[in-house]
Amino acid sequence: MVKEMGWTTAQLGVLSSVFFWTYGVGQLMNGRLSEMFGVNRFIVSAVLLSAFANIVIGFQSSLIVITILWAFNGYFQSMAWAPGMALLSRW
Image 1 (cartoon, rainbow, N blue to C red):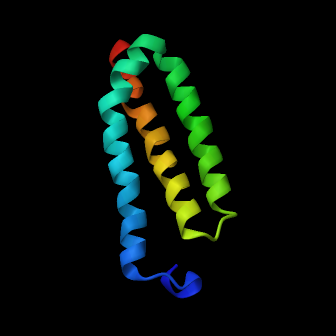
Image 2: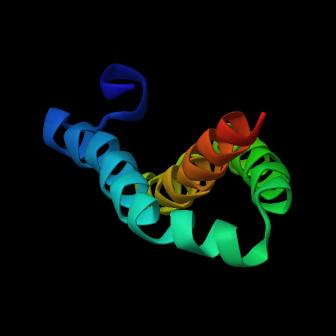
Protein backbone atom coordinates (compact mmCIF):
# COMPACT_ATOMS: atom_id res chain seq x y z
CA MET A 1 0.00 0.00 0.00
CA VAL A 2 2.91 2.32 0.66
CA LYS A 3 4.19 1.92 -2.91
CA GLU A 4 0.86 1.76 -4.72
CA MET A 5 -0.92 4.57 -2.88
CA GLY A 6 2.08 6.78 -2.15
CA TRP A 7 1.49 6.77 1.61
CA THR A 8 4.18 7.05 4.23
CA THR A 9 4.82 4.32 6.77
CA ALA A 10 3.59 6.69 9.49
CA GLN A 11 0.25 7.08 7.71
CA LEU A 12 -0.02 3.32 7.38
CA GLY A 13 0.78 2.97 11.08
CA VAL A 14 -2.04 5.37 11.98
CA LEU A 15 -4.39 3.44 9.73
CA SER A 16 -3.46 0.19 11.48
CA SER A 17 -3.77 1.59 15.00
CA VAL A 18 -7.20 3.16 14.41
CA PHE A 19 -8.74 -0.30 14.08
CA PHE A 20 -7.32 -1.50 17.39
CA TRP A 21 -8.31 1.62 19.31
CA THR A 22 -11.91 1.53 18.10
CA TYR A 23 -12.03 -2.22 18.74
CA GLY A 24 -10.88 -1.63 22.32
CA VAL A 25 -13.35 1.19 22.95
CA GLY A 26 -16.12 -0.94 21.47
CA GLN A 27 -15.25 -3.78 23.83
CA LEU A 28 -15.91 -1.48 26.77
CA MET A 29 -19.42 -0.65 25.59
CA ASN A 30 -20.73 -3.57 23.59
CA GLY A 31 -20.83 -6.19 26.33
CA ARG A 32 -23.44 -4.28 28.28
CA LEU A 33 -25.29 -3.10 25.18
CA SER A 34 -25.62 -6.65 23.91
CA GLU A 35 -27.17 -7.71 27.21
CA MET A 36 -29.73 -4.94 26.86
CA PHE A 37 -30.61 -5.46 23.18
CA GLY A 38 -29.96 -9.18 22.69
CA VAL A 39 -26.86 -11.12 21.74
CA ASN A 40 -28.27 -12.62 18.55
CA ARG A 41 -29.23 -9.22 17.21
CA PHE A 42 -25.77 -7.85 17.99
CA ILE A 43 -23.92 -10.72 16.31
CA VAL A 44 -25.97 -10.50 13.13
CA SER A 45 -25.58 -6.72 13.03
CA ALA A 46 -21.83 -7.01 13.58
CA VAL A 47 -21.40 -9.44 10.70
CA LEU A 48 -23.47 -7.41 8.26
CA LEU A 49 -21.97 -4.04 9.16
CA SER A 50 -18.40 -5.34 9.13
CA ALA A 51 -18.91 -7.00 5.75
CA PHE A 52 -20.40 -3.80 4.35
CA ALA A 53 -17.52 -1.68 5.68
CA ASN A 54 -14.95 -4.06 4.20
CA ILE A 55 -16.63 -4.04 0.80
CA VAL A 56 -16.78 -0.23 0.73
CA ILE A 57 -13.10 0.02 1.79
CA GLY A 58 -12.17 -1.97 -1.30
CA PHE A 59 -13.46 0.81 -3.55
CA GLN A 60 -11.76 3.71 -1.75
CA SER A 61 -8.43 5.39 -2.43
CA SER A 62 -8.50 8.29 0.03
CA LEU A 63 -6.55 7.68 3.22
CA ILE A 64 -9.00 9.66 5.33
CA VAL A 65 -12.04 7.78 4.04
CA ILE A 66 -10.32 4.43 4.50
CA THR A 67 -9.27 5.40 8.04
CA ILE A 68 -12.84 6.36 8.97
CA LEU A 69 -14.27 3.17 7.47
CA TRP A 70 -11.54 1.10 9.16
CA ALA A 71 -12.45 2.71 12.50
CA PHE A 72 -16.09 1.76 11.98
CA ASN A 73 -15.00 -1.74 11.03
CA GLY A 74 -13.08 -2.05 14.30
CA TYR A 75 -16.14 -1.04 16.26
CA PHE A 76 -18.39 -3.36 14.28
CA GLN A 77 -16.08 -6.30 14.87
CA SER A 78 -16.00 -5.57 18.58
CA MET A 79 -19.78 -5.93 18.55
CA ALA A 80 -19.41 -9.67 17.99
CA TRP A 81 -16.90 -10.69 20.65
CA ALA A 82 -18.77 -10.20 23.95
CA PRO A 83 -22.13 -11.41 22.61
CA GLY A 84 -20.36 -14.35 21.00
CA MET A 85 -18.82 -15.37 24.32
CA ALA A 86 -22.17 -14.98 26.07
CA LEU A 87 -23.81 -17.15 23.42
CA LEU A 88 -21.14 -19.82 23.80
CA SER A 89 -21.43 -19.83 27.59
CA ARG A 90 -25.20 -20.38 27.35
CA TRP A 91 -24.75 -23.16 24.82
